[in-house]
Length: 357
Image (tube, rainbow, N blue to C red):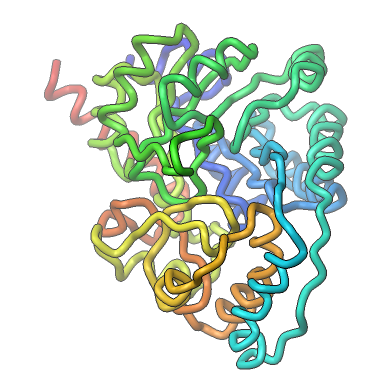
């Protein structure tokens, strides 16, 4: 009974598999299909306005009666100067000129956007709320708990997992260094270095230091990764890249095709696109930005300054100037419908479990 444990009971799902938030790439069809197939679909709401999230939640609820979640970015402290913005804009000017784009206006609305999202989760009785980039303040945690919302946090170290449990978070995702997309790190490290601990190393250490369910994430693409995670002590897995290339995913075709044609040595961890470190396929923009002699601006400022460049490049099939988030197992990526993907995952796990038994 690999699929019947504390996590699956807490989330009220048939299988302890969570589709990662993947902000900007989830669709109501993807989320609902994952949930309808017995796992936990998640709306990637990190960039969504209150109106957009309100509409997305209602669309998902129209497509499924099963539990689903909303993934949010916890606002952080932004320390930057006008001079840094001007310097970055000067560096990005050739890209904007080539794409015929205007210089954007920096507009920090993180805090209000986050609070509006929390209100939406409660208003629509979304059963699960997931957090990346930190832990919400206690008043927000209490507000969500009073509304019977189950809370999932993200940690890249044991210390971050302990902080999640101490704050009252119900489940913690152990995000290994193999994971695609943004790193969920939030505790400071020397010289702004990233804690790049592999999933197989991180999970058992985390399991040994917290009592809440641990979910493995990072490079997990098939039944083998799921079984390995369970053996290490995780109660479930979170999968991003595996769902990113699914037919129901909202990811741009250039993103999907680049992942499907990539290999394990193609990804790097970089902060040049958004100001937050993230794993994605290496390209010309990343290489050229490595020559930048100033400071990369913090999220969401850097994200706003490069946003139009990335969107325009992706819409025109230019994989060299856009972000292509991917974990370290792109060779295992497939392009299929969610129901087929989920069916294959469950069969693979059950065949492996039968062999072990």
